[in-house]
Image (cartoon, rainbow, N blue to C red; front, side, top):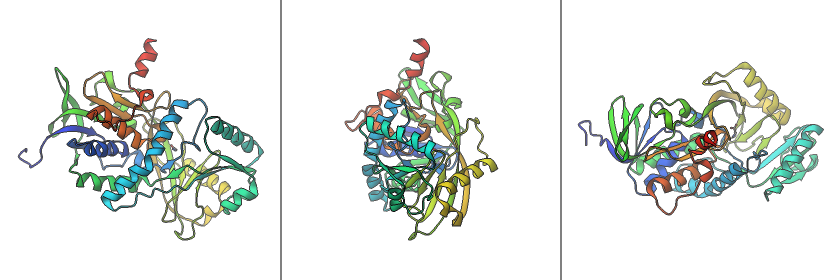
Length: 382
Ligand code: GLY
């Protein structure tokens, strides 16, 4: 123990206490490792605080991303067990609900596009079905009466990322994981690889280090330049409205071509999200909020009666191929868990399992070959 009562060595240091870092710490602790998490700000105050929490590998499927789909589906399958374990350990509700999702076409052009997306879903063997306007409004009576059709996805779900972060913090503390307010300033290395992390308060030693710096990964000065992944910030603005828990404006995730709405169990509704290449700009703008509210109103006119709670902006960690970066770097014992772009909440359980397998080498580890950090180097060389 150090003089201030804090043991400054552990088996693993996780740098970054967003959902990805906390989930990695959770799995590592479950695997028997002693873990310290370093975070320079409030845990979960980055993208995790802004995310709507859609667990929607089917509804959010895009063309040309089969590897990402495979990762997303595997993590989706892990979600019920992951949140059940966190909820059982803490007694806290994470807001996880298998609501399903209804994707709505508001005119004939959008209907053509939505049918093409449904065909793509079906070509991957995924479960989705077409509904006409009456069928769609039977399920969700609040959607615009002028809709042209809709696709129902039963398997998609939603979680409250803020509630999940709060529960993980409680669970980690109970499991003996320390979350320390400290800024990483460098790494400690020796002949065998990583030996710890330098902070403004001195060195912290660990045989393994997991870097989970979110959108800052590409510019994180504490990481040697050679191992920084090509991650860029992609801004997303989100609006939160409040309704009535026992008379919700919708039961399911609702989506249109331009907006999605994620209901919370307490009647709140999250409207997301803009996708903006603005660098490290986290300003909430009039234009962003206007666009979200306008499109939400086109989809679900009842939003006009809801109370405005807040508008926030966060930074997604984007990669060149939209696939995350998970794995060991060229420095032995230094791992990356970042680059989750639009799927950070969804991919948390799979990322954490993969990191557990790589760091501890136990049987529960998931293989995430498509996310290996060196794939970008190979592209440059090849
Ligand atoms: N996953 C939704 C978003 O990033 O906006």
